[in-house]
Amino acid sequence: MRTFRGGLLIGLAIAVVVAIGAIIYEFYDTRTLRRTVRRGEVLCGVNAGLPGFSIPDDKGNWTGFDVDFCRAVAAAIFDDPKKTKFVPLDASERFTELQKRKIDILSRNSTWSMARETRYDLYFPAVAYYDGQGFMLPGSRKVDSALDLNGSKVCVQANTTTALNLVDYFRANNMKFEEVKLPKLDDVVKAYNEGKCDTLTADVSQLYALRLNMAKPGDHAILPDVISKEPLAPVVRQRDDDWMMIVKWTLYAMINAEELGITSKNIDEALKSKKPDVMRLVGNEGNYGEQLGLPKDWAVRIIRHVGNYGEIYDRNIGSESRLQIPRGMNQLWSAGGIQYAPPIR
Image (cartoon, rainbow, N blue to C red):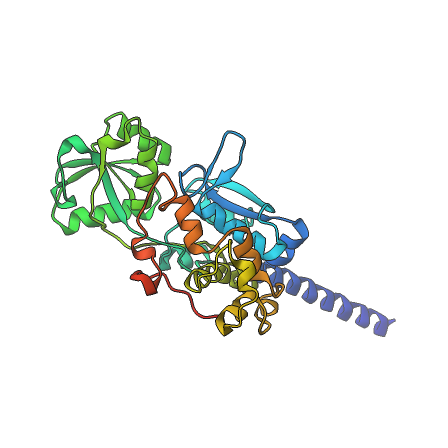
């Protein structure tokens, strides 16, 4: 009897240890890819409505640069960019919703910083868009430089790096300003339109988008000054390296495709190429897709369904869009910009 009881206690102890280990393992290994495949769609957190980046039409169809990135991830996994569900998130909730696993990836004009990675236990795998903070104001103010904004009343969204940068800029330049800080971007824009402030600050890309929705866009000027570094990147949870690798290399595949001249229109020709770099990208040489846990044609799926980096940029925010934002720093490194992807091999 004593032996039986001893064995029972040992067995219970082992079971408890195994159960605790499973809980710990699940906490540290979120297995997002496995859950995404089982669910059959990628849950993507996006801005509730930012023209050019993420905005729904009256039928609920989403478009934008950030939207297309999520569709590219879905294309790599499912060979179907439509297997994506978009979850609109406010700035104040975007990181916590990702932490709670309400979404698989955050693709929502979010600045990569060390403080955010450490505070929220998140990863920013790669920079999708190099941006910087700027200022918009009525053209009637006749201001040409941010250094002439002394004494301005500035509208800014709370709980953002934008609000912190604003204070730093005016303090560093020994200028005074009155801050009108509001929780939601819609409230910030409304306050600006109602004349409760004479200047609006946000990322430059965001200012271009917001200006489109003004009653008279031409009456508002965006100053040339850029007062901060705002590397905008997709965001995933830490301790989920398989998923992070897929997100990171989805972006790099699109950048490498543009550099190699591979587009959604000539992808079939690229599949016949004998150039080593092209062959590796399209899966005709090596097992690079399998190393990501994806099929060998993972990059082909992305390019065929969504396009390369330049195509996504141009149609959403660049030369083919209403925003007409110059590529600037987001040009490829070989074309004078700083957008750069590591090689496949």
